[in-house]
Amino acid sequence: MELETISYFITVAECLNFSEAADIHHISQSSFSKAIMRLEKDLGVRLLDRTKHPIQLTEAGRVWYRDMCALRPQFQEALRHQEAFRERRRLRVLGCPKSYAYRNAIRDYQEAHPQDLIEYDQTSEYDNIVQQMLDGGYDLAVTPKPLMLPPTLKMTCLYTDVPYLIVSSSSPLAEKESVSFQDMEGLTFCESPFSWYLLRELMRCFSFTPGRIEPDEEGTRTHLVKREEVFHRIIRGKAVSLYCGRDVFMFRDQEICALPINELPELPVVLLEKAGSRQTPEKTAFREWITASLESYVCPLLK
Image 1 (tube, rainbow, N blue to C red):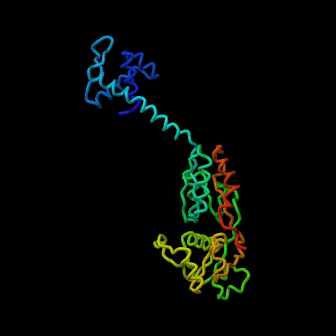
Image 2: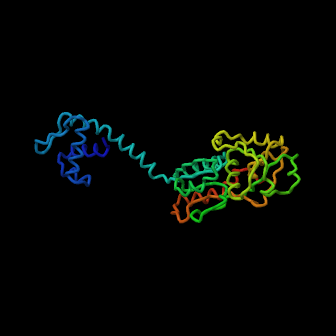
Image 3: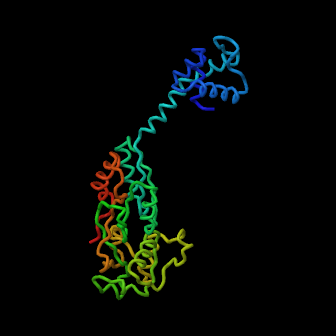
């Protein structure tokens, strides 16, 4: 049973003429009559006596008309509520990695722009960001710049960051000012969720081979260790790890050394969108705000 059909019935109950009621709703008389017959079938009663001219309400029809008239203001209010949702401008945004800073920024934007509905998802799967954007599941993505960006995507730089190899201050590598991927050959890496995917993507693009990755099986990705546990292993000299500078800022006073990577001197965080996609007011407003504001939500750049 559809609300539209109930509206049809109220109209014909008031004018007692199928042709006139159909004209009011701008549909054919045949379609209008069929809708009323479906309503009667759904209810299991006859609402109209069609043997009389003009047609008349049956006793069941009079009761149904009375009840529907009483409910009509609530139906109209419910429709207005839904109309408000349809009028809100919707943006689907993907954030990588999972970040309290990004989430807080999105929350503040939503509060400041109640006319826009931001559907925000987060992921650690850095190696899958490009594909998710190409698949059309999201309008925008906030993410470290993909290492291989297809021409079908365009980016806006949001803020600068630098990838580092994190080693124990007692490691022989700590004496270097920077490292190359060749220096990383054979090392044991311990990674938390985002850095696990970052490492895999760097291995694919720069063709280097660690000695071991913890965890080393794809099936264990959902059980990756927390960042604090990773740094505990690094400090004890049990492993190294890859992190961006703003993610390790809080650990800067511990017994670690952050070494820049020669082949990848920076990894800026960018806003991705499809090249040539329609530029809506809500997309433009979000891009301008996030470009001007996001850096204030993240840690300072590690010096």
